[in-house]
Image (cartoon, rainbow, N blue to C red; front, side, top):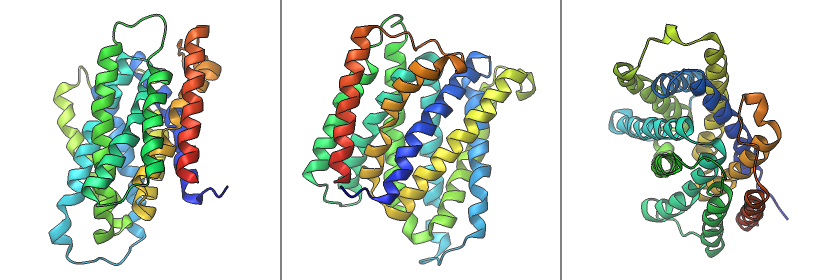
Length: 295
């Protein structure tokens, strides 16, 4: 079986995404707060993409005519990030991360509608299997269900916004080139995030040292993950394939929470046999979905 090399990026990104999510969850539990956490994470992401300015590509057309495109996708990405952190702060990583896998279904639909791409039947089947896997992986947690609806709702909204941002990025990057588009997109996200400041419950200086350590680590890991996914989308396109493989983070979330969750102060690892069985079936379906894409 031939595995396209560029799909290794979302496969590895699925793992690092979960590590970053666990760190951000830990930061919010130590008092960092959703608004301040999102602000810092977006600022770190904006700085992480700045070095791309030194790698210039030919500009197709006029920059003045297309400057608004990275601003739009940056704004979408910013709101999606806020939805994700809201979901993580109130719910479980082992719920929000697998549910975020529905993004692959949205990307398949939007790629067909916005990019005029012909999506292979196998990809539609894979997207459908991924959606079923999401339900089995993420919606069967025993114990506290108080905020499950809140968490799932915000995750689904975030997944839709991320998918719209990804699809438009794949559509608009060629006109400006990856090295111009991504720094402008992330800079726009960072600048727009200053609008979060009125919602801070206290200044950044009031964040505890423990929360800062988790927050900075999570922000750096998230920024690196996003850099890999957005670069893959911008360079190779393949928005649907990239996102279906990236959905493997649902499997990683179950495994990491189970095996290493306690290192992050996470208590989700105590799963019952019934929940674990459902999640194993979900993980198998996710693997089938990935195989359908890469073959």
